[in-house]
Image 1 (cartoon, rainbow, N blue to C red):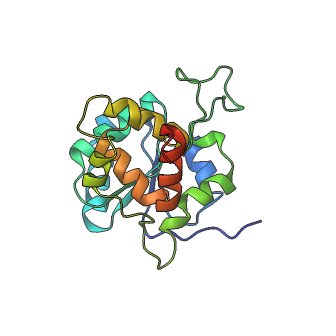
Image 2 (cartoon, rainbow, N blue to C red):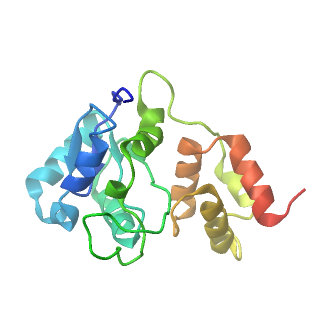
Length: 196
């Protein structure tokens, strides 16, 4: 069994099953949102605000529409250090559920502890968080932001890179710069758009 990761920041997940799965991979604090319940829980919101301001947090919600909605709403009221981690978009359902989610994607609890460990590894130890240094200008130059059809191109490349669908240009850039090596990014771009 792999050693559990000691992360620089606590991990915020949707529910208790997600927490149980993430705790297989990390020894750091894991905080549950209780799904949409967090938005009615003033104490939980105050805790998250303080953590964000004083230390920073990792947000690891499901990569479906509901998870992305929760992530977006959190970013509306949280100020400070926020690091988004995205699970790959994998079709399926969790074992404990009779049916898949509305989007038909595996949630955080559907991934193995070792898969989650791999996703969270950049936040362990003393190393830096960013693995790429793609700029907004480069994104624009590649036609992935600010132009006609850029959202569709971004969607295609996100799929090729295993990132969730529907990311804004800023969220896409953040995800790329945190999790995707520059070489991998440009190779995926070339494959997607048949660029020599």
